[in-house]
Length: 365
Image (cartoon, rainbow, N blue to C red; front, top):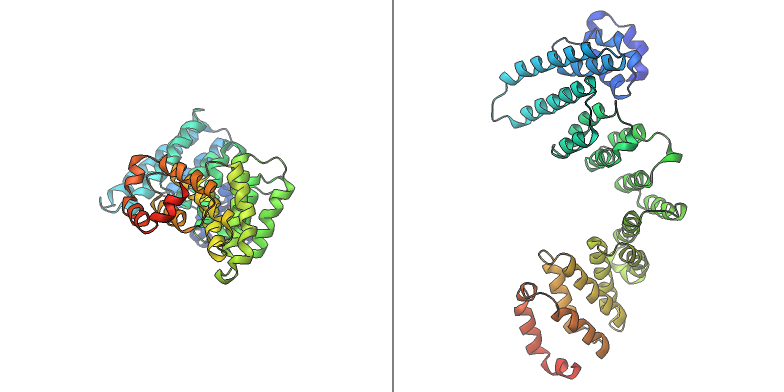
């Protein structure tokens, strides 16, 4: 849109009024303040968006009193618009509330009362959508650099990716982080996820592995997540018929993930599942069976209230795998350490297995 500005200048006044708001928003999003005056004069005077852009432009020119007047006019337009909205039209009402938040925070900027912590709390109470985050952050970015708002900036990019609008995702990522050589690791990971979401799975896997190789100093929580993504993507790229030859490669990454991030439920779950599949394809691989049991037990420890599936898989595997006496006793000890509330969930399965495998179990103890 910005590249079309010479065409805009050549338009007639009536045609300029038709497209002025689009050009004004484009220049505002890029914070190109010097380009706004020639566009704003053709925007509708009854537009809240124009008042938002105008007030921020005035602040950029240190005309703070004028900015407060523009904010006041914006609130008057909002009040008029609100009268025409039925109470049950929550979608339209929420749009007005977002505009009201923008105007209020612009007034705080004009009065030198901006506070990033307060703004973050407000934003976290907003609807989790790209449109909302983009509108609110467009105000915040006029005051604070993106480096101070990393969590919310990354959230906005994730919301764009979740929408599957890849043009929106790319433009947001490259606007907030234009220099690829200086990308934070979190941004590089998001870029790899964008490649994966487009269906370029092999390229995405190569990029995420490159992140691990190229960055020696990665915070443990993030490194654990990257190792998990590698393992998960390898599994997702593999046909079930080829699991037996590929899963062990995925397990290597998942093991690294759980070693670094000991309380990372997703990694523990996927590692336990992969180990159980390896064992089911090769009943002689008792190490994988033992690993799967301990993985499922760790899932239960981390989420005892919602890990029923893991609990049932663990019990089934415990009674079906021909573990060594040592591994059987180690696992049994961990099972008996589970809380009563957890054990009550699997009483029927326990009794069934105890009745069916009574002789085998007695020989173990």
